[in-house]
Image (cartoon, rainbow, N blue to C red; front, side):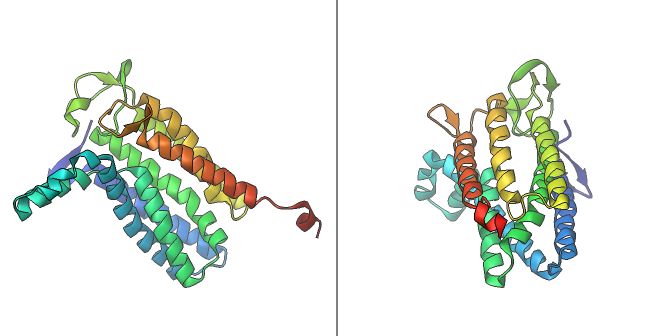
Length: 261
């Protein structure tokens, strides 16, 4: 597709541009919605800043965990340069779930430190998480990573960053996932506007997205990812995230007595 271009001697990747577009669209939207509902915009900015740090650490850490079989290169390095090259090879990629979990954890710590209303903050954030990820998946499509299985009616990459993606028509699974995320953004935005399931919108996202991600993983053709028991790393995490969301929603279910009062 269109992995990037060179400007003034500097290579700029399409993924970076779409990610920035996602950040500068999703974050201000969440901050505006939070402020509209009585929250402090500066507090929300700090939540996103710390969440971004957690996201960056988490996505690279989980990628490194999927490459655990190569960790021996770190300990056998004969020089700092060899160590650095091995670290880039092992931790240089990213996994969305790692970023999601790391970002949520760091954001939670920031909310706790600022003594913010968890329910309101997470409700305003949930739609923006979906929106940001939708932009990211468009970037994956342009760059040719996270590509789909071969399909005669698919799209053929010729200059994808991942060489194995090129030369054969493939399912545009990246766009399918982007469509799922845009749909989730619309649904969660509607629920936020209507006041449906207050304080539980993030759990709704974590309930629906893993189901779609689990199914879409079967259409992925990048088989260099981690697998266990015939399921990909993301499918196993999807099961855990879905179960956690179910438990949370059950625990937060309004009781009849409280509704009556």
